[in-house]
Amino acid sequence: MKRGKLLVSTGMVVTMLTLAACGNSAGTSSPNATATDKAGASSQTPATAKAVKTLTLVVHSSWVRPGFQAVVDLVNFKSAELGAKIELEKIAEGDAGDQVVQTKFAAGEPPDILSWYDATWSSKLGGSARLEDLSGDWMKNYDSKALDTPKYKSDGKLIVAPFGEVGTMSMFYNKKVFQDNGLQVPKDWKEFLAVSEQLKAKGITPVYFAGKDAWTLQIIPLVGAVRDSKDKVTPTADGLSTNKTHFTDLKLFVDSISKVKELADKQLINKTFLSDDDQSSRQALLDGKIAMYAMGSWIVPDLVKADKDKANNIGAFGIPFDEGQLINISPPSGLWVPSESKNKELAKKVVAFMVSQEAQQAYFKAQPDIPFAKGIQVNGLVPAQQDIKKLIDEGKSFQSPLDYTKYQKGPFEKYLQDMLVGGKTPVDVAKELDNDFAKAAKAKQDPNWSGK
Image 1 (tube, helix red, strand yellow):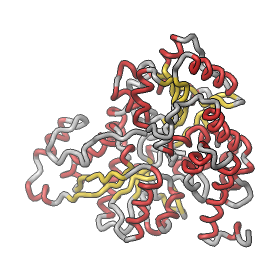
Image 2: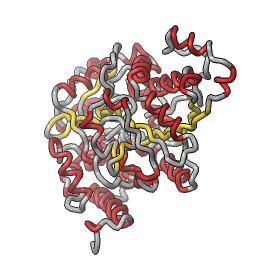
Image 3: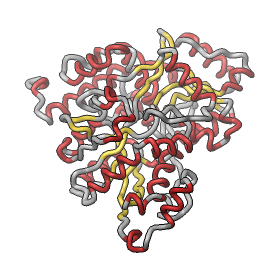
Image 4: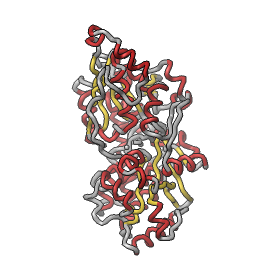
């Protein structure tokens, strides 16, 4: 997954940032602009400037982090050259925001550019026929095998251009809290529970749940989804996509769901988790009021922005399941161009620039992270990112089969909320996901679900 939808996105993923709704216009200064850029911008004639069109880019609010904004700013700085500038339309997180996107398409009024999930989500918008093929020279800077997957292609068309960093999900922790209390990073679930009990005994909240932002509850089980597949990602995804494998068959995935409930049942989480939000986790983790928070790697720039010094006290480790630590890794989701956009050719040109080496270098200058594009120089990784990179290098990262299924899970976060308040069991949650797949498949008259 992604950062696919969590939301897989994955990645699906996250804080709300107060950022400008649109970047700088042509001719203004950009932190990533070169002298050549500035000279070129200043030499444009008024007639050229009038030709610049404004393209609307729809994106979940929390996805507009420093790197994303830096690329938007660069596009707007080079608007005279590109013939376009970008105006961001920020939407809510999770299902609420997704409904906005689907409503726009249903009304025949899609944005010029959409920053969304992987290509399998095209089924929610009427299929790949409503989206432009984005193939182009920019592809040489990316892994061709990764591009040739359902994450980016649908019906043979490359309808999603990857944008940004490799996404991961892991457990973030305050290293100083661990050091001050003589604790070691847990290697498995038994050790994790023991560490949590020790923290609880000392009046420190062991694990933070942001139940108000329910999508965050998915992190641990989404990482757990890799436990049943690991090196069998494609067969597992194919099985789920053809009604041969069900979520209830994935015993370790169901166990991962149960572990969320176990933490709540043993009171190893914040007491007010149903009203606590994701945004509050940042400062609480930095200040050591909470010890651990399962979250995506996209949290790191927010921690650094909040307090760079304290961010150096934050580390990361794999979710410590029974068999050991694991993290979920996912290539980025990306940018889409709806075929019904009145500016689709210009939008395709802008997207090609946004995923170019030049733009991606600006992205990672503003937001040091692990890039998906080749040839990008990154300096200044903080300890948490170094820990994540080490886990990847050690082979403890795996892609989720949920990134490559034909159909998408339903409101997983709602099912988890229901479980935490006593309305469902872990198996019930898995059954709901199976029901979601069945409904989506039958709606498409998928023969694998006929008569079932």
